[in-house]
Image 1 (cartoon, rainbow, N blue to C red):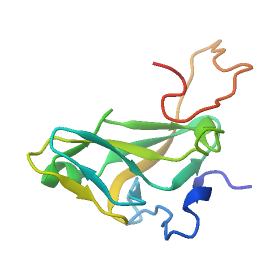
Image 2 (image 1 turned 45 degrees about the vertical axis):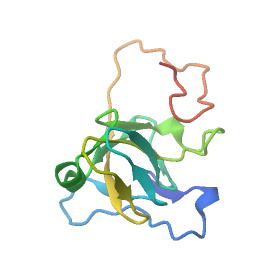
Image 3 (image 1 turned 90 degrees about the vertical axis):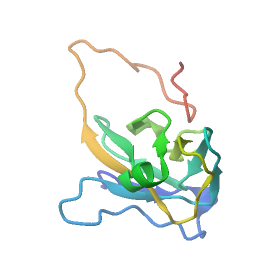
Image 4 (image 1 turned 135 degrees about the vertical axis):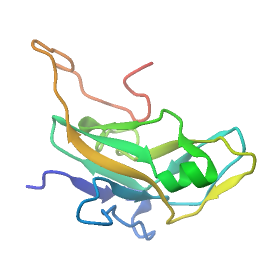
Length: 150
């Protein structure tokens, strides 16, 4: 049985989506690429599709961070600074667990994220809960982005 990894969502099968991989043996993050071109205008935000979903153990989370080259060179940042992909996001009925990256352009010029461009890195990690935590008992995630409420 597989413990953690990435898969291409159904609507992007056959479209040349690359599964994330680490660039070196000591890299913590798996580079996620854009699945299609996305323009990000100055001062505006956009959603970058990856065409991917991630599976992991119930006590794990995938943390997403912008690649430093994009933030330093092009002033592109994540809208929420760090993305959180919960284990129950995988295969949810709304969007199959599609990892989409919300970015903001702090620069003065439009920037186009090109298909295949490495946009973010994902780091799998475990998390802890407090004693007596009853969250989620009897509850099942149904949706995608923002599905647990504001």
